[in-house]
Length: 250
Image 1 (tube, rainbow, N blue to C red):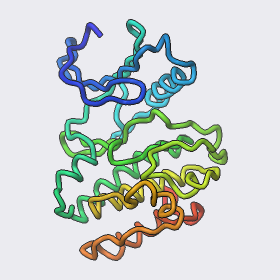
Image 2: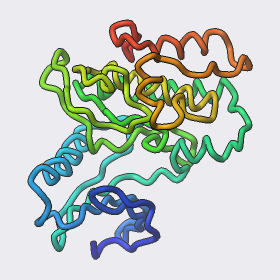
Image 3: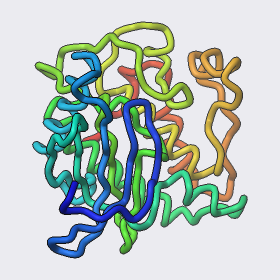
């Protein structure tokens, strides 16, 4: 860590801290995920951290947060990534303060999220935690998908993951019902993100109603300010039957 100067702490997660740093070598700002006590943490967590590094190091796409390198120092694992100055999509949605985003802006971001998703789905990776907090904006407004901590590289596209992980508000019906799932659960989550961009609030409200709402596919309609095409796209993405949801390519 001697090569970096800490600018500020950005966030705190289950396994560690995210900090904004400035490189003493090139003067650029980067984000470093600091995974604490790597020597003490369980093998499972250590594997998770190393898996994130492995997944990121194999991905190179304009709409995916670029991984730079990783290293261990004084019992911590450090993952160095590009810094997205525009913050995350959830902050952007909050900053609208109820003022609807334009359809053009929503579709621009949506397409970029889909391009990132296509890149990982083509490589048999399910992200498993797509939500506005994990979608970042660069200075020039490019959207980048990040946080591959719980992504899983599937051995083959046909393999179904069975572990129930992710963020409750964005879980697909099949995950809620403990059924096996595939990359169509990412499509559901993208539908939830699209819904949030249109309505400035999550598709499901309080946690108690959440699974019921998700499994029955009930959510308040978005504003008629948006085109019929956009609303129909939303209905396709938030279809309770994963086989009826479009793939990212279609």
